[in-house]
Length: 194
Image (cartoon, rainbow, N blue to C red; front, top):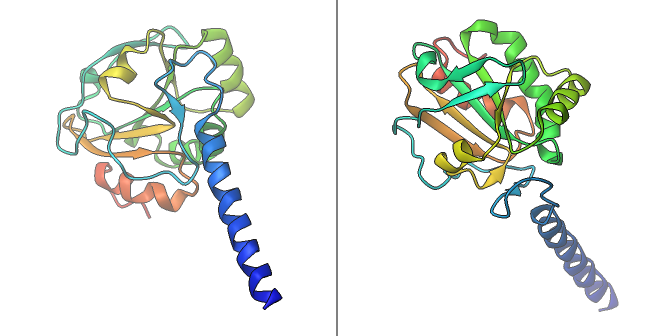
């Protein structure tokens, strides 16, 4: 009987640790992010943020990149677009950057990938990009307006947009593996992702 109690106690402990990790993950300090934003769990989910649904027209915006170039979403029509909303203070964002770098290296000009950093100083973002060897541009959402228009509630969140400017899919949380990205890429790329 003591083995059964010991096993039950271990299961309760494991469940408590998992739940505690969830709570800690949801309570990451926000740095300069607004209070309504919080880091998503590393496992991610396929839930759609408020205001976005597959088939909807992607809200247009114009943002400046870290290099000073102004990028307007509507001017990218004809190309699939991946918007990755993130911040340097987000540990889960850091985990998926190498995977995004690999996608950009593999598909090059077939897809426009943009990181969208919310409300952080340009110098902070540029330093971080260099340290992580990011090969895709980052746009500065200095007021949080674009994230608000896209209903972004968690970091990271990826929004996949077709060449016609329609939402193909939204993934909330970090992509833990390349395999999790492939179905979303298959929705917007003109060729198979494998």
